[in-house]
Image 1 (cartoon, protein in one colour):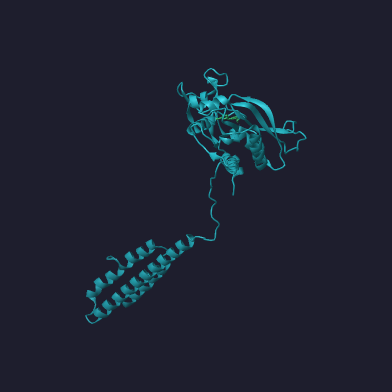
Image 2: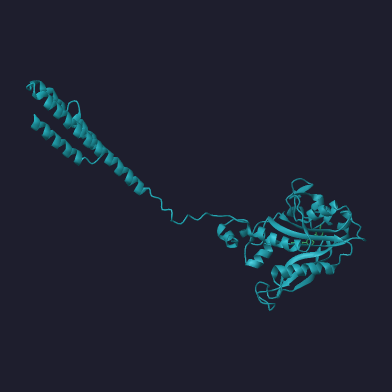
Length: 344
Ligand code: 2NL
C-alpha cells in the first residue's frame, strides 16, 4: 500500500506540473483527491490491514493528500500571477507617446476682418452700433430717402415678412435709429457692422445673405473733406501706407453728393493688371454726404447739421485681399477653406 501511495503521489505531482491551465489543474484535483479518487480508495481498503499498520498508512495517505493539495494550490497561484503579469504587460500605457491632435475652431475670417475694420474706426473715435436684422420698412427704406414706390426699393429684391416688416437689406437702418435716439443733437459717430439680406440667386458673386459695415458721422460743420480724410486714413491703415485713394462721383438715394472710393492697385503699383482690370484702381466702398431729407427725418435741422456716411462689403474686401474667387466659400463652411485663415 505504501508503494501504491508513493506511486499515486509521483503520478499526481507529474500531472500538476504538466497542467497548462486552471481547467487541467482542476481535473487533476478531481481525479486524485475526489471522493471517487484512488487515495479515498486506499483509505477505504485500510480495514484489511493489520491493526498496527493502519495509523501509519492513514498518516501517509493524509500526507500524500496534503502534498498534492499544496502542489495544486501553488500551481494555481503561479498561474494567476502569470496571467496578471501578462495582462499588465499587454495593457501598458506609453505615456511618452504624442497626443492625438485636437481639432480646434476659431473665429471666421469675416469676423476677424470686421473686427480689424472696427478697431481702425474705434481708433478714430467711432463707436459700434448694432440693430435688428428683422427691420421695419420705415427704417430700412423710408427714413433713408427711399419712399414707397422708389425704383431702388424693388419688392422683388427683398425678403418681406409682412407688408411693413422685412429682413434688412443694408445696415443703414441701424444708423437711422441711432440718429433718431440722439434727438436732433450731435455728434453721432458710429460704425454699424452686421448681416444683411437680399433676394438673389446665389452664385460666385452673389449671396442672399452677406455682411456690411457702414459708418456715419453727424455734427455741425462736417464737410466732404472730413469724409475724405477719414477714408484716406482708413485705406492706408487697412491696405498699406503706400496706397492712394481717389473719389469718383456716384449716386445713392441717401447721400448727396455721393462718391465711390478706389484704392491704388498694389498688384501692379498702378500699372494695370487683372485684379484692377487694367485700370490701376480697385473699388473699395461707397460714401457721401448724408442727404438733407435723411437728416430731417431723423430729427436734425439740415441747416445746422451735416454728416457723411459710407458703406462697404467685408466679403468683397476679403476676396480682394486673399484672392478668393467665390463668395459662397464664406458660407459653405468647408474647413479646408476656413483653416487657411486660422490665426495661431
Ligand atoms: C456701398 C455703399 C453706402 C451709406 C452707405 C448711409 C447711411 C445713412 C445715411 C446715409 Cl443712415 N448713408 N449709408 C452711404 C453711402 C454709401 O454704401 O457700396 N455699400 C456696400
